[in-house]
Length: 257
Image 1 (tube, one colour):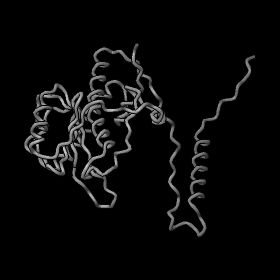
Image 2: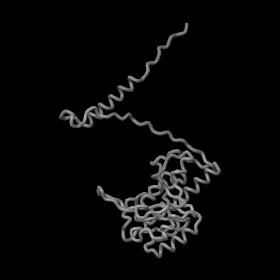
Image 3: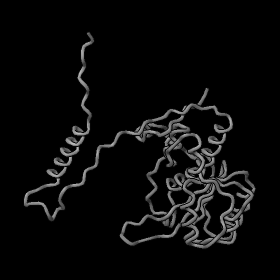
Image 4: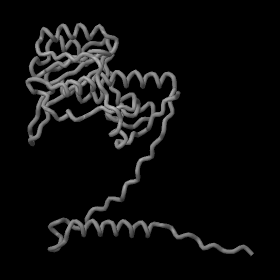
């Protein structure tokens, strides 16, 4: 059966989909020695999925460095806790490796975050956002892409959790592992569909947007008692009037003799 994919996937359609679960092992890395063993194991794989996490900032001007690097093969995900280890020589070797294909999403941004910790020469990475448009798909978020291609939901509830907590919860570990591992699944499915052409693309039309109208006066210029509601109403009235004026008159029908 040919796969049906959509040029844009309706976010409302994600809510009731079954949740994705990572089926493999999840191993936290907190020392340089553990990192060395993990990297040796990972580089024996034929493909890897990658992602990063950063502790969220809730105050203006507050910034945090990338604190978690998650790297997965098909059955194991390692969580490198960078706020404890930093970019060790082994982790740098992994990031600069050119022999194993590593798949990420919006990975260009992740690289900038990692380079803020330590400079390195990026190795063999593929960004899903660079290849999915070739199928006619315009969505670029991991959640929408996974729902589109696999009809499964990736939960984003842990995204703003504390990634520098002394111990990561099981839900955090699942979230982090899924984000890396799912990149492998998406890459291999996109590659399969590109090679076989075994899909039908359903083009979803963009919803029409209402005309945007700037208010004719700034708040300081408004008379006392003028409200934003009044401004919006007059804006809508002007837009409607403009539409009426621009509409061409239809020629009168004349009866044939």
